[in-house]
Length: 262
Picture 1 (cartoon, rainbow, N blue to C red):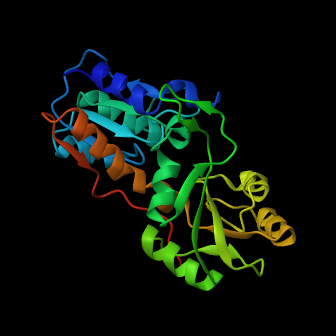
Picture 2: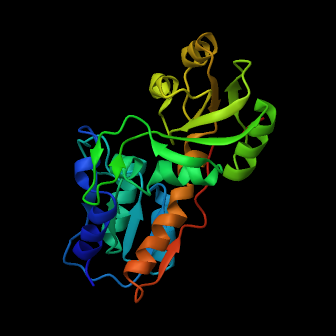
């Protein structure tokens, strides 16, 4: 088994064609010809995760977020990205990622988020195309929950996502039709509104976006970037285990959200 075979498999579940133009996905460090004996899966390729990969004897790190996002002008030990790249290279560990393609893909980040929150009748909001199996794909997901007060739904979101805290705006509506977009998707709130949703769960919401949601009559919940996307890590690891049963695949254990609430 080599790295390129893993990359090819990821292409089947999160095709490169589904990524946004500005994104950076695929093999970002190492050689496609390198043999793979163990895989570590994580949300981010931060230095602590790279060290965990080495400690566990993994020679391939598979993440959602890219190791290299903005093109660096240098690779030195003076930046976290530089230290991570140098560490991986020294230890012969390759780094592969699926980012916005995994956000948009069927069974990816946002399907997992919707399922984790207990939504039913899940569908793609504003589909961007269909995959080879004829399934629609796109960024946001929408679904239904049993009608309930916003306070009750907030408790469910915090518990199911193991979020440290939630920021939200209450539009005065009960929760029934819910849209979800893991990570920084607040600028997609009009897609949620156009789909008839009363509530939108996402992350990285800006001050003015909370006000916009309140004026527009949308319950807007910011559950945190890590909390809304991390559930896909276990699902991605399970898909890799099923595809490559001979390979040990583990999820990172020491990677957590660094944000705290005082």
